[in-house]
Length: 127
Image 1 (cartoon, rainbow, N blue to C red):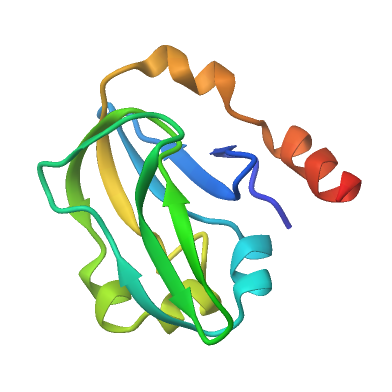
Image 2: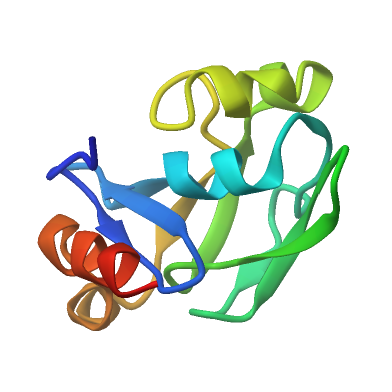
């Protein structure tokens, strides 16, 4: 299931826009499934500036180390310490408890460049 309440990157990150101008960011179910058991997260520090679709960190699994890309430009205002301490949360609940960070969005128009749930589903079907 691909939640309709967020937008997606072709690299399998998601952003859920909140009414306060922030966005929760994480990876998709498909991404965590492809990675296998997640064992380590390298997330940007609070206060870091992110640019849309540029590298923001890394995620390590028993299979590989993969880059994480920012779905939107903004400033990191929180990281999920629970997921950093227990990276397996990303596997168990990628759209909930396994979120990675919260950003204060600085370029809301960038949302239009991201995929809708339907667009992301089409991307997965084409792979």
